[in-house]
Image 1 (tube, one colour):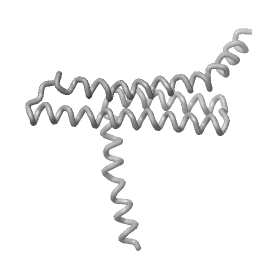
Image 2 (image 1 turned 135 degrees about the horizontal axis):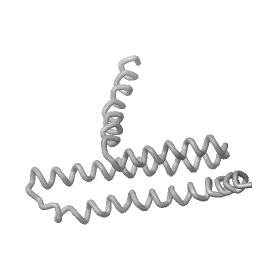
Image 3 (image 1 turned 90 degrees about the horizontal axis):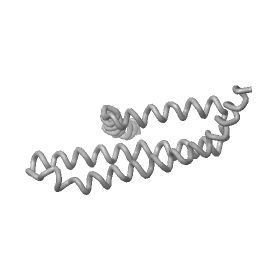
Length: 129
């Protein structure tokens, strides 16, 4: 039983290392900063449980999409470097993977706007008068 639990725990180590590797990339750090801002705004504006659920889901999907895109870029680099493929031969695949991240980030921004814009508008209105 203890051995099984240890093996299960040990299996999370490479996954955690993968997440930390992802955060070495510039785009992932940008998404991380956006996530920190969203968490701050969520706490500041005391968003509802349903809004927290939505924020958590879309934030997780953006980070996941960026991790997959980064892994895909690494695979394309291996194909280019080890198999002698040109950058242009992997460009379409790279662009589609990056496009998937962009779509998810736009969806997250729209949901964030729906949740936070009305609260920010009220705050700005109150502070002006």
